[in-house]
Length: 385
Image (cartoon, rainbow, N blue to C red; front, side):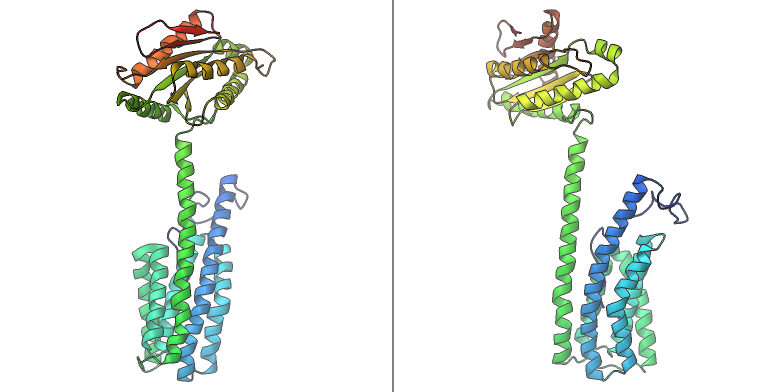
């Protein structure tokens, strides 16, 4: 008989339960606990579908041999109970268990023990016995690994030996055509179902990994890339320019008098300004540009494959849109921006950022609310406001 399978189908349960397996504080303990309970229920539902399919097809497989052996009515009743009722009973038991994960492992051992008993009841008919044992082994390994397989095999061997002893160790290993045909649905359909469930799990985990990777490089307040990721992008673009492949400009953006805004209007207003500036930056840049929060009220922007004059146009758009905005208290606010163009002579990323920072501070010293830039080659800096 076959049972549910799928790698990582049974995640460990710990945070919602105490050391005795009881839910902390009851079913309504916290949002985290409720989420974990929902995850467990989804897991149980997935395993229930696989168990219902596997045991149903397994009943057909075993039934073909029982028909050849002229099995008594009570054997057919037991087969029907396991194939049709047990999957639903196992689901109910898992849903009402203090530890659904452990309950499902116990159910898997019971399934394997029942499979061993049916192998003996089939008098070791080669094809249905081999298919039954193979499907159970697949379920054990993919659900709980080799350790689970060894644990379940011990129960399977004990059950098989017990039923074989009751049956005087009768053996008819040669399988008829009917037995082979009865085993085919389990052999062909169940592995496909397991593979489908495994694929869906892998796809979900891949999407979760992508989301985690995105969150790992995203700054929470503004939704922009964080400093570490942004500096990695800047380093990559500088290396490309140093190898003679295109051009790049780096911008440093700072909110004017941000500390005064924070002190007079509060950090909530300051946070709102940071989010608003992030929106403005995203609305002004090109698809391949990478903005990032550098620290405090300072933002960075890496613009690949662009000249300094075109970068100044983008920076001026950011400056003018910010100057046209009002904060939550109806007060206007402005930004200053410094630009630095990369070249083969730029020493490293820190030097590139320092060049843009120097232009930013020049913009501050000239009255703020303006854009200052420095070309890669020697020459005079430019200012726009």
